[in-house]
Length: 246
Image (cartoon, helix red, strand yellow):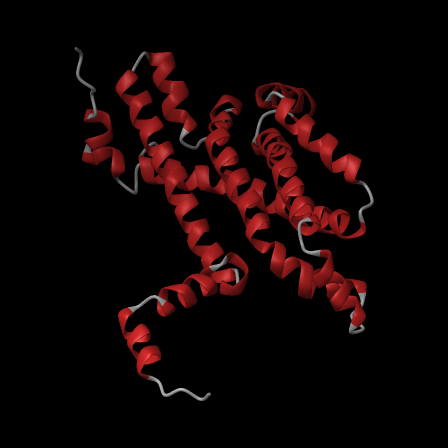
């Protein structure tokens, strides 16, 4: 059985900050493409999904975009964008934005529609405007699903951003495309490993961000703490020893 060659990954020179072909520089480029595409998609998809979910208008558009986004071949979109705008970061960004918008818009729409109608009616009953209902009631309750859609889109974008190398740009895709062209398979393996680790790291960071932004009462953490406190031996002893008020 042939052993896995990790020499390219573990060579110190390939991790030098000053090397334009080294891992740190390529990771920074890769994160730049991902951040640019996600920022544009976030500004477009999340507000539109929230508004459609709140008003109920255009639900067919969200469903259609979600299905179309899964069916569109990313490489085909890149080739079409290349023929229109030429080489550079523009075709890569266009393809990645088209990839990221459907899952975020669908998640935002579904998250708002999943908020209890009783809660929404109560908010309207106390005199809240529609904007206040959306931003102060529906959005906080929908935030876990909304962020879940952002995490899903981020993983798709960071994995697909390797196509930047196909357009003459940088990023971790350089290790994959250049390695295949030169039949340097340790380089291909190293790029794939670093890309996988980067995706996992981004998901962990977004998971921590979700924990910070979402209220404990919304995601169930508060209820879990109450149950854990009620079942602890100290709490049980205090309850058992407390005098009866009957």
